[in-house]
Length: 100
Length: 164
Image (cartoon, rainbow over all chains, first blue to last red; front, side):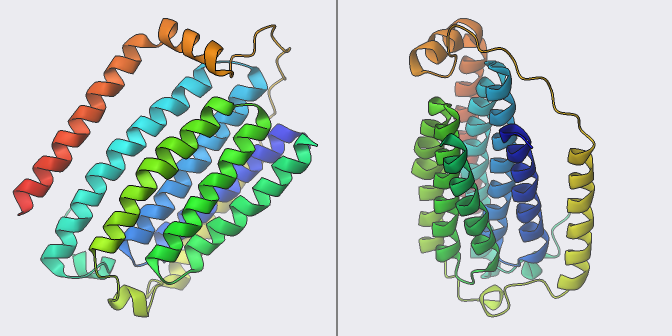
């Protein structure tokens, strides 16, 4: 197993841990953090492939993933604060009537 | 030596990701996530992708996580999700999550590794080479990214204003 295969497997492991957190945890904020872990795993795989191929597109894609993550977290935190103000709870079970 | 660094930071990244899953208090989870992101930055630095290591620290740890920490401090986290942090259907969730993870691992296992490219004369991951190439090839995407950031700010402001 070379360095890049190891990093791909590591990215899969980290993505799986994030996925487990999303389906297991009940706290809205912790679920958001687990989503960030999954996003980090994707970035890790992008970077390892880009470094392996010595190409720029993977690194450029990573930059745009960071921009999208910044937008996502700004919007998501605003929605989380509003939801908690309305229901008074960070528990996902308190927001079961949400559609979609 | 590089492989030792990558192995060390990989171990740290996995340990802190597990801590995010298992710790009860959201603030401790956030601190574990910050440590996880710093570990990933260490991996990127060991790989020679210094630009990405800097982005990881500046954007993720410096902006995204600080924002999340402020949100945690703003909200009262001592509710029912604090007393019982895992889903009531944790067993089903665990089985589904493990099945999805197993599928992912099988997909990775069946992927053949691409051939390693020959080392080019110019390393594209140094700051100067990256900046020049980025501004020559991706200037339009960069401008679009600024528009996306602006839309994100306006949308967050509108969401909060609508809810007040």
